[in-house]
Image (cartoon, rainbow, N blue to C red; front, side, top):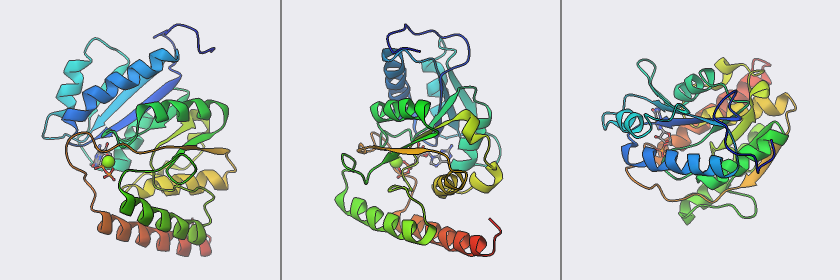
Length: 249
Ligand SMILES: Nc1nc2c(ncn2[C@@H]2O[C@H](COP(=O)(O)OP(=O)(O)O)[C@@H](O)[C@H]2O)c(=O)[nH]1
Ligand SMILES: [Mg+2]
């Protein structure tokens, strides 16, 4: 569809945006507004799925109230199996778009970058947001440097060819994604993302990295503790090295 065509809200969406939320009441409404504006600007039929893990702050209620008149915004409140990767999986399984875009909802991931990554994924299998290629980055320089070193470790130990294995900002062709074994990918936290990259690399899917510069979280607090999350990722990297050596993954 040429970019000049007007917005058409019927038929299969061009993109399904998966927005996992936990305690994001202040962020979710402005984020969805901005995404809608961006997609309308480029003439893309969108579907936006907010996948909320029953946030006590009323995230789901706020999103539902703000977008009651837009059938392209769907709010799902999950009952069982809380967790980031399970939420993303549920969103994907309930989506219809020909490209699936996943992003954080706290403005660490910028809507403008997400739209560019979506446009890339229309042409290849996977568009991946990367902080570690020219033009990318994040405001916290210490975290940036530590994440940069950690990604070098991941590239060497796992053999991934991607510079940022932890961004969690990506878009993928629906047909490509559904070739992968979801049970092997979608559990845990940000580690699901490097399992997805590894399996798609094994399937020889085409990956294109797009530089992204993170924004500061707009409102609320982060759910992750930097040190404990890296310990968790390191256990998972070690497990994958072992399983792959034994031909069991
Ligand atoms: N559905 C769901 N979303 C979550 C959960 N934990 C975190 N998120 C969302 O995942 C994204 C990243 O979380 P965040 O706390 O910003 O992590 P950080 O960016 O690594 O500090 C945000 O959109 C959160 O709302 C969870 O248990 N369930
Ligand atoms: Mg964040």
